[in-house]
Image (tube, rainbow, N blue to C red; front, side, top):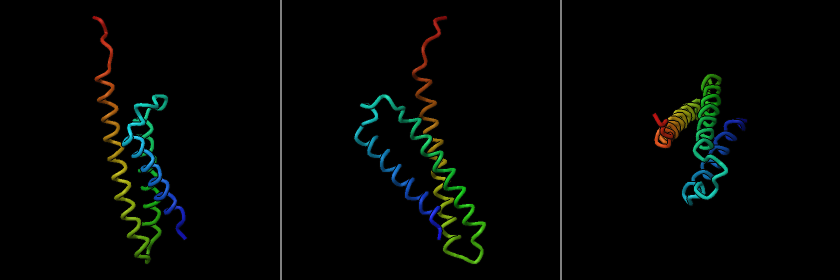
Length: 106
């Protein structure tokens, strides 16, 4: 009945596991073709947007269905956590750019 909501949760869990394995085994240092920080930022930002959209749909349309409203509230919390993850990754990207800036030579 609510297949879209389950699909968001399952896809984000799979992507989170994949990125966890990549960073845990330090494969990001071996495969330099992909910018892993930017990829992780896009994963977290898309996850935040999808969770917030589907959760708002569940909360708004769930009048009288307590389980749907509860799922929507927990989805909103997950969306906020994904947004915070995006923010921390963005700060990490921003700090790594400032440390690797080339001198201007003046």
